[in-house]
Image 1 (cartoon, helix red, strand yellow):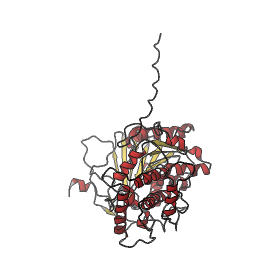
Image 2 (cartoon, rainbow, N blue to C red; image 1 turned 180 degrees about the horizontal axis):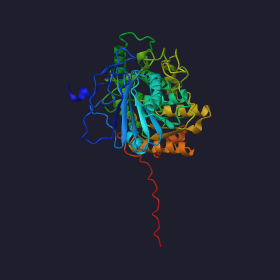
Image 3 (cartoon, helix red, strand yellow; image 1 turned 120 degrees about the vertical axis):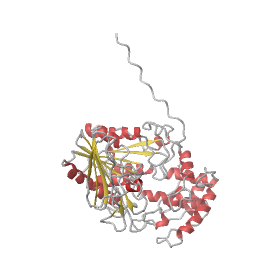
Image 4 (cartoon, rainbow, N blue to C red; image 1 turned 45 degrees about the vertical axis):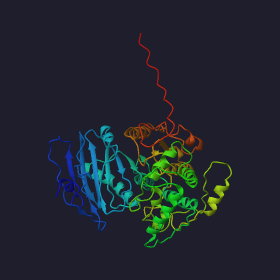
Length: 479
C-alpha cells in the first residue's frame, strides 16, 4: 500500500482518539489504520481523520495539541492551543457530492484560531449529499466530544461554516440557541429552499427565451437526464453560452443575463464578469459538459435536492424582471406569460429532516460574507436572510459583508480574519460589527459596492476600481 493510500485510511474503532502535542519535524509519521465501514450508514466508509485527503498526516501546529476520532459514523478533528482562551470554534464543511466516503478537514482560519487562543473542532458528518440536518447533529455533538477529550467545557462556542456549512450554521444556532454565542457563515445557503427556486428560475427563463418547451416531472424517468442534456444544449446555443468558452451572447442571452442578475441579488458591479465566468464553467458531474447552471435544473431530481420528501421549488407567483423600470416591458410580459410554472409539493422542514428551514431568528450575533459575483450560491441568499431577520425583529443581530469576487467561497485570509476578529469583538463589547446594506437596491448597484470589506485580489472579477482609501496624515513631529 502506498503512503498516500495509508494516509487516506480511517481508524477502525467507534471512538479512537489520537492525541499528539506539538512535535518537531523529525517526529515519527502518523500511522493510519484501514478504512472503517460506517457504524451508522451501510455502505459508507470513514477516512482516517489523522490523515488528509491529500495524503499528508494531520499534525498539530506549533504550540497546539490535536485529537482525532470517529463517533456515530462521523470523523472528527479537534485542535487546542496550549494557551487556550477557553473558547471553541465549531466548523461545518460544505457540500461534498453524493459519494459514500466521508472525511474531516481543517477550517480556512485554523492558524488564526490557534494563534489567537481559540480551539476548534470539525466533523466529516456521517453522510454526504445535501444533508444539512446530519451536519447540524454532528456539528453540535462536537461540543460534548470536545468536553470529553479535554476534560474542560468551553466557556464560549462560535459556529461557522462555508456554503452548505453556512446552512448548517444558520440552522444550528436556531435549533440549539443556548449552545452558541455567535455565528460566522460564509458563502452560505442562508435562504434554505430559496436556493433551489433560484436554480429553477435560471433554467425555466432560459428555456422560455430560447423557445424550448421543457417540463418538470415530479418523478423523472430513467432517460430524463439524457433528454435534458439535449434540451440544455439547444437552450445554451440559442443564448450564446457554452461550457469552456467565453459567452457570445445573443439578444436572448443578454435578456437572460439581465434576469439572472436580478434574481441573484440585483444590479451590481462586476456582474458581467461573473456571468461570463459561470457560463464558461462546466456544471457538476455527471452533467459537466453543460454550462454551470443548466446542470443544476431542479427538475432533474423532481425538485427534491436528493433529500426532500417532494418538490420544494415554486415559481407560480414569481414575476421575472430584466429591467428596473417601474412598469414591465413588453418583453417582460411575454417572458412571464411563456415561462414554465412549477408548484411545490414539499417545503423546508421545521426540524432537521429534508432541507431544514432557516427562520432568520438568530439569538446571537451573526456575521456573514458573500462574493457578489457568486452565481452558484448567490448574494440573494444574504438578502433573504436579512429580510427574514428583519421580519422577526432580529435585524440588529445580522451583518452581511459583500466581497468583490466571482467565485464560490472565494475569500482571502485577510477578509476572513477581519470578519472573525470583528465578530468576536462584537461578542466581547456588544458593539455591532460594520457591514454592507445588502437590502438597499441603490447601495448594491453602486460602483463602490463591496469595496469596504474586499481585501486582496479576486481572479476573474472585473469592475471599475474601488475609490482610493484616504491615507491618514503622518503624525506631526515631536518638539
